[in-house]
Amino acid sequence: MSQKTDAQLITEATVIRTETALGANTANRVGTMFVDSIDSKINTDVIDANIALGSSDALIPTQNAVKTYADGLVVGLVDDRGSFTPSVTSPGAYPSTGGSGAGGAIKKGDLWFMSAAGFLSTTAVVAGTSVRALADNPGQTNANWNILNSGLGFTPENVLNKSTDITLGGGTPSDILYPSQKAAKSYIDDNAALVDSQNTFSSLNFFDAGIDVDGESDINNEMRVRNIGISFLDDARLYMGTDPGTVGQVLTSQGGTVTPTWETPTPGISLAGDNTFTGDNTFTQSTQFTAGILSPVGGTSTFNGTLDINGFLRVGGQQGTAGQVLKQGASGIPAWGDAGVLPYKVYTVLLNDTFNSGFTQFVLQDTITSVGTTLNWFSQGNGVYRLDATGSSPFTENKTWVVIGQVIAVNTYLLSMLTNRISIKTQAGQYFQNLAIEIRVYP
Image 1 (tube, rainbow, N blue to C red):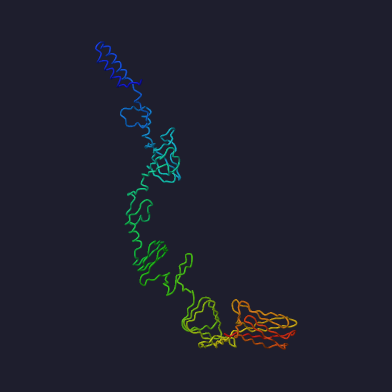
Image 2 (tube, rainbow, N blue to C red):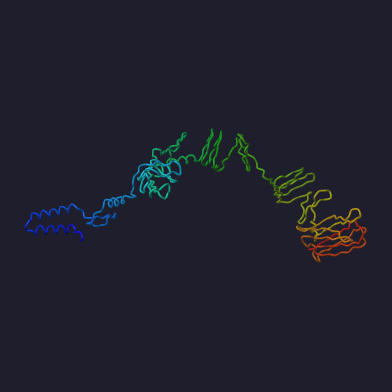
């Protein structure tokens, strides 16, 4: 038999009370007793332990269901934990105690405000910055924290420190005051002004702006110019003492406290017009002659630099003609003469093969050998002597002429020739001295 609900019991009690005529008082008392008993009892059918509580108007939640549901609503909400003093050095630590959890454990939503400037990890913070935990037990992991820097990030300007003084403090400038834009411009413009009248600077002066001199300025002490230029207008002059210098001269420092002097630079020698050198002369730098050079007998000129002649060169009173070259004369004095260029390349040598000295060679002239080419004689015995060319083949076919002469103690000789080798054959067993051989190669 199933248990009746409270509503069913109440209905039955009412029926008994109204339908019984005899013993009505007794029935009434019994019905009242049932109603009172039912009213003081909670039926377990309506008790609900669902921690989500649901949406029913008939069910009754348990104490635990209500507490769990309510606690779940406040998890992760911001919980102000007061102030925190950050480290003054980087990296600084995040809060590690004082949280809303058991024993001060830090929970999600715990919030602190910085009491001073400093660092949270490597982030610079100012007083008033807040930091909030994004997870339970966040540790020192940057991703588990949120920093909200509510400070300005800079020191506000104090208008009381603004200065409009166009002298910028004169002789006692301040390290606290800062000039207005107009004050700075006025000071710069005033110090870069044109010096257009007679001025005397009798003490140490520093010019940190441009100097335009349009009048006369006497500097009796010292003037230092730093990273700027000095402009002299019109026909102004710069005096060193009483010396204004001359055209082409430059200022030369004398070192120390000695006044600089005007000097004529000598990077080279430039001579115009006809020039005669009668003694021994040495030119150690580049020399330029824009006219002629007269070189009389009795003097020696030595050029150790570059000699640039834009005019003519006379030797012994002679200018020379087109195509002539300077040659050593019989008296030792150079003279103009024909170039005398041979129409061929030539190689002249004297060969010796004697009993006492053996085989030797003496080259008298050689215009055949070029860069990378060498000529060498070899004695092969039995009267055969060979000239080998290495590096090239200089003896052009049908262009090479070999002349053999001036021979002593040789009766006969034979000749064979290639483009890189020439062979001479003498009578076997014979010695010779000064066997002259000349090889000519025509173009």
